[in-house]
Image 1 (cartoon, helix red, strand yellow):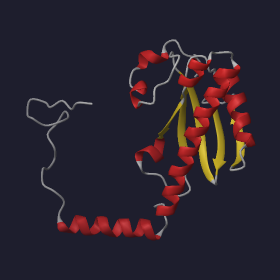
Image 2 (cartoon, one colour; image 1 turned 180 degrees about the vertical axis):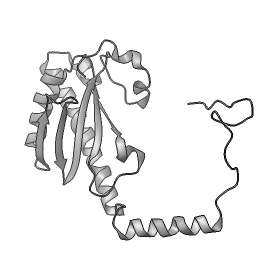
Image 3 (cartoon, one colour; image 1 turned 90 degrees about the vertical axis):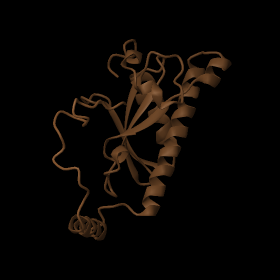
Image 4 (cartoon, one colour; image 1 turned 60 degrees about the horizontal axis):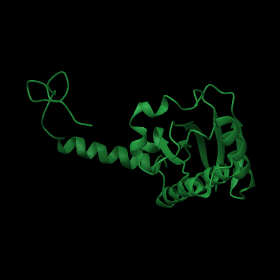
Length: 190
Protein backbone atom coordinates (compact mmCIF):
# COMPACT_ATOMS: atom_id res chain seq x y z
CA UNK A 1 0.00 0.00 0.00
CA UNK A 2 1.57 3.30 -1.01
CA UNK A 3 1.47 6.28 1.30
CA UNK A 4 0.33 9.60 -0.09
CA UNK A 5 1.93 12.79 1.12
CA UNK A 6 0.04 16.06 1.37
CA UNK A 7 1.35 19.36 -0.01
CA UNK A 8 3.57 19.87 3.04
CA UNK A 9 5.39 16.58 2.48
CA UNK A 10 3.80 14.88 5.51
CA UNK A 11 1.65 11.78 5.57
CA UNK A 12 -1.89 12.39 6.73
CA UNK A 13 -4.15 15.41 6.92
CA UNK A 14 -2.19 17.54 9.39
CA UNK A 15 1.44 18.05 10.26
CA UNK A 16 2.91 15.85 12.98
CA UNK A 17 2.93 17.31 16.48
CA UNK A 18 6.65 16.63 16.74
CA UNK A 19 9.41 15.18 14.58
CA UNK A 20 11.77 14.54 17.50
CA UNK A 21 12.41 11.02 18.72
CA UNK A 22 11.68 9.70 22.22
CA UNK A 23 13.54 11.21 25.15
CA UNK A 24 15.68 9.15 27.51
CA UNK A 25 12.87 9.43 30.10
CA UNK A 26 10.30 7.98 27.65
CA UNK A 27 12.65 5.13 26.73
CA UNK A 28 13.08 4.28 30.43
CA UNK A 29 9.31 4.40 30.97
CA UNK A 30 8.82 2.08 28.00
CA UNK A 31 11.29 -0.38 29.51
CA UNK A 32 9.43 -0.22 32.84
CA UNK A 33 6.07 -0.90 31.19
CA UNK A 34 7.50 -3.81 29.19
CA UNK A 35 9.03 -5.29 32.36
CA UNK A 36 5.69 -4.97 34.17
CA UNK A 37 3.83 -6.65 31.29
CA UNK A 38 6.39 -9.44 31.20
CA UNK A 39 6.30 -9.96 34.99
CA UNK A 40 2.48 -10.06 34.86
CA UNK A 41 2.74 -12.78 32.16
CA UNK A 42 0.93 -10.65 29.60
CA UNK A 43 3.50 -11.66 26.97
CA UNK A 44 3.67 -15.24 25.81
CA UNK A 45 6.84 -17.24 26.41
CA UNK A 46 9.00 -18.43 23.52
CA UNK A 47 7.83 -22.04 23.90
CA UNK A 48 4.20 -20.86 23.75
CA UNK A 49 4.91 -18.88 20.58
CA UNK A 50 6.53 -21.93 18.99
CA UNK A 51 3.55 -24.10 19.95
CA UNK A 52 1.15 -21.60 18.34
CA UNK A 53 3.17 -21.67 15.11
CA UNK A 54 3.17 -25.48 15.14
CA UNK A 55 -0.60 -25.53 15.71
CA UNK A 56 -1.18 -23.13 12.82
CA UNK A 57 1.01 -25.32 10.60
CA UNK A 58 -0.99 -28.40 11.61
CA UNK A 59 -4.25 -26.58 10.92
CA UNK A 60 -3.07 -25.48 7.47
CA UNK A 61 -2.00 -29.05 6.61
CA UNK A 62 -5.36 -30.37 7.81
CA UNK A 63 -7.30 -27.82 5.75
CA UNK A 64 -5.28 -28.68 2.63
CA UNK A 65 -5.87 -32.43 3.10
CA UNK A 66 -9.58 -31.79 3.76
CA UNK A 67 -10.13 -29.83 0.56
CA UNK A 68 -8.38 -32.50 -1.53
CA UNK A 69 -10.50 -35.24 0.06
CA UNK A 70 -13.71 -33.25 -0.38
CA UNK A 71 -12.83 -32.46 -4.00
CA UNK A 72 -12.18 -36.15 -4.73
CA UNK A 73 -15.42 -37.24 -3.03
CA UNK A 74 -17.28 -34.64 -5.08
CA UNK A 75 -16.23 -36.49 -8.25
CA UNK A 76 -13.58 -34.18 -9.67
CA UNK A 77 -10.71 -35.67 -11.68
CA UNK A 78 -7.30 -36.45 -10.20
CA UNK A 79 -5.62 -33.44 -11.85
CA UNK A 80 -8.18 -31.13 -10.23
CA UNK A 81 -7.81 -32.94 -6.90
CA UNK A 82 -4.03 -32.46 -7.13
CA UNK A 83 -4.48 -28.71 -7.71
CA UNK A 84 -7.24 -28.27 -5.10
CA UNK A 85 -6.20 -26.02 -2.25
CA UNK A 86 -7.53 -24.12 0.73
CA UNK A 87 -5.55 -21.56 2.69
CA UNK A 88 -5.63 -20.31 6.28
CA UNK A 89 -4.99 -16.73 7.34
CA UNK A 90 -4.78 -15.32 10.84
CA UNK A 91 -6.39 -12.03 11.78
CA UNK A 92 -7.21 -10.12 14.94
CA UNK A 93 -4.90 -9.80 17.93
CA UNK A 94 -2.64 -12.71 16.95
CA UNK A 95 -2.06 -11.34 13.47
CA UNK A 96 -1.31 -7.90 14.94
CA UNK A 97 1.07 -9.37 17.53
CA UNK A 98 -0.89 -7.97 20.47
CA UNK A 99 -2.35 -11.22 21.82
CA UNK A 100 -1.94 -12.48 25.34
CA UNK A 101 -0.60 -15.92 26.22
CA UNK A 102 -4.06 -17.47 26.61
CA UNK A 103 -5.81 -15.68 23.75
CA UNK A 104 -7.43 -17.64 20.96
CA UNK A 105 -6.19 -17.38 17.38
CA UNK A 106 -8.75 -15.94 14.98
CA UNK A 107 -8.27 -17.75 11.69
CA UNK A 108 -9.96 -17.57 8.30
CA UNK A 109 -10.04 -20.57 5.99
CA UNK A 110 -10.42 -19.64 2.31
CA UNK A 111 -11.64 -22.35 -0.01
CA UNK A 112 -12.64 -22.76 -3.66
CA UNK A 113 -16.11 -22.07 -5.04
CA UNK A 114 -17.22 -25.70 -4.97
CA UNK A 115 -16.55 -26.06 -1.23
CA UNK A 116 -19.65 -24.68 0.47
CA UNK A 117 -19.64 -23.69 4.09
CA UNK A 118 -22.49 -25.87 5.32
CA UNK A 119 -21.60 -29.07 3.44
CA UNK A 120 -17.81 -28.96 3.26
CA UNK A 121 -16.79 -26.84 6.22
CA UNK A 122 -19.31 -27.57 8.97
CA UNK A 123 -19.75 -31.21 8.04
CA UNK A 124 -16.65 -32.65 6.41
CA UNK A 125 -13.94 -30.52 8.03
CA UNK A 126 -15.72 -30.79 11.38
CA UNK A 127 -15.66 -34.60 11.09
CA UNK A 128 -11.94 -34.64 10.24
CA UNK A 129 -11.13 -32.40 13.21
CA UNK A 130 -13.30 -34.54 15.51
CA UNK A 131 -11.19 -37.60 14.67
CA UNK A 132 -7.86 -35.91 15.45
CA UNK A 133 -6.53 -36.84 18.92
CA UNK A 134 -4.89 -33.43 19.38
CA UNK A 135 -8.23 -31.62 18.86
CA UNK A 136 -10.51 -30.96 21.84
CA UNK A 137 -13.51 -28.81 22.71
CA UNK A 138 -14.77 -28.81 19.11
CA UNK A 139 -17.85 -26.59 18.88
CA UNK A 140 -19.45 -25.74 15.53
CA UNK A 141 -21.62 -22.61 15.59
CA UNK A 142 -23.09 -22.53 12.06
CA UNK A 143 -26.07 -20.30 12.90
CA UNK A 144 -24.11 -17.48 14.56
CA UNK A 145 -23.96 -14.04 12.97
CA UNK A 146 -20.38 -14.98 12.10
CA UNK A 147 -20.44 -18.79 11.72
CA UNK A 148 -17.40 -20.37 13.34
CA UNK A 149 -15.77 -23.65 14.31
CA UNK A 150 -14.27 -23.25 17.76
CA UNK A 151 -11.77 -25.82 19.02
CA UNK A 152 -8.38 -26.40 20.60
CA UNK A 153 -5.36 -28.07 19.02
CA UNK A 154 -2.83 -29.17 21.64
CA UNK A 155 -4.46 -26.74 24.07
CA UNK A 156 -4.30 -23.71 21.75
CA UNK A 157 -7.75 -22.16 21.14
CA UNK A 158 -8.74 -21.55 17.52
CA UNK A 159 -11.77 -19.71 16.13
CA UNK A 160 -11.97 -20.80 12.48
CA UNK A 161 -14.17 -18.93 10.01
CA UNK A 162 -14.74 -19.94 6.40
CA UNK A 163 -15.18 -18.14 3.08
CA UNK A 164 -15.22 -19.61 -0.36
CA UNK A 165 -14.06 -17.54 -3.30
CA UNK A 166 -15.13 -17.59 -6.94
CA UNK A 167 -12.07 -19.61 -7.92
CA UNK A 168 -11.75 -23.26 -8.81
CA UNK A 169 -8.29 -23.30 -7.19
CA UNK A 170 -7.06 -21.15 -4.30
CA UNK A 171 -3.40 -20.17 -4.77
CA UNK A 172 -0.91 -20.25 -1.90
CA UNK A 173 -0.27 -16.52 -2.26
CA UNK A 174 -1.82 -14.03 0.15
CA UNK A 175 -2.58 -11.87 -2.90
CA UNK A 176 -5.89 -13.69 -3.35
CA UNK A 177 -7.26 -11.79 -0.36
CA UNK A 178 -6.50 -8.34 -1.73
CA UNK A 179 -9.14 -8.08 -4.43
CA UNK A 180 -12.80 -8.03 -3.43
CA UNK A 181 -13.88 -9.04 -6.95
CA UNK A 182 -12.98 -12.62 -6.08
CA UNK A 183 -15.87 -12.73 -3.58
CA UNK A 184 -18.66 -11.65 -5.91
CA UNK A 185 -19.50 -15.15 -7.16
CA UNK A 186 -18.70 -17.03 -3.98
CA UNK A 187 -21.09 -18.45 -1.41
CA UNK A 188 -23.12 -15.40 -0.32
CA UNK A 189 -23.29 -16.49 3.31
CA UNK A 190 -19.52 -16.81 3.54
